[in-house]
Length: 212
Image (cartoon, rainbow, N blue to C red):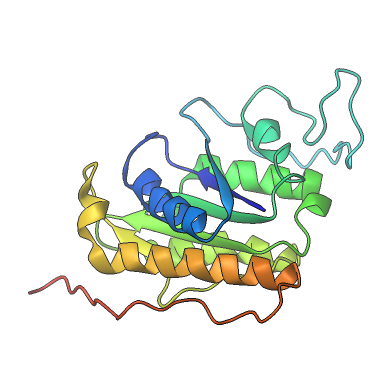
């Protein structure tokens, strides 16, 4: 089994990547393969509502997915079919997810939604201080429209940090990522019909407050 982790930050190895890395390590411990794919920092088209999607059929040049094949969208979309679960992650900008990630998700979900249905998914957001819950809710809404079981954690999937490396100092946020990963593995094994499926391991809660 494999989980696709989409890094929706223009910074390849910033705090969003750190949060996904914690998930990837935990999934590996649970016997689940992962791939982190970065959306990059080049321009991404928004959906133009042209309704010319291939609906899974290849275009003359051989690609499938969105009619526009000049950015990262179809590269990510092409990995949907081979993936059993998904995590979409974004930094927070003005209380919203990165616009490039939203554009990729909207186009890929619309043009290749059949490859997503009934596969577990989660989202996470990373911020310096505020706006994370609004961005988190925004990212999570498409999952429910695509009939994707939403994987939960012990708290909203939020990690705090501004400068690279600061996310690792958010002990509760990192624990939330590990719990998310174990719940994802538990759900994937359950969907595969594993016998005597036990509840995922739970760590002792390690709360971290802003004011100490």
